[in-house]
Image (cartoon, rainbow, N blue to C red; front, side, top):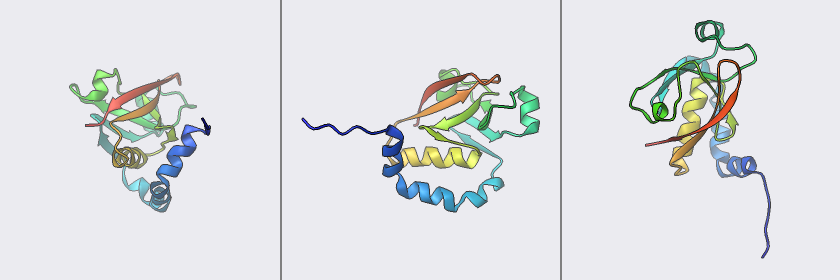
Length: 133
């Protein structure tokens, strides 16, 4: 039996190669979207105002969760407002548009779940899987 080993990140980048290129092309439009609703969560830019409002440490980067719908998949997984999404499916996110694009790319690939890396207000990291219905 012949086995080829590789990193999962590399395989996902190759599988979504077209999506990666379009993300870079439309990166100039990202500031136009300051909040977005996805998977039962409302996400927004992580700036000085949201850092102060939620008490988020300066070293934490990503997209802040500003609201979580009560009966959503996100609420079932214990996600709370004030947590920060740093990665989705092992790719960093920095704007609400990045989050929307990444979730859309996962749906196009036929994925049923999204793997999120969340940072708490103090910077502690945890992984959460959310159903994408």
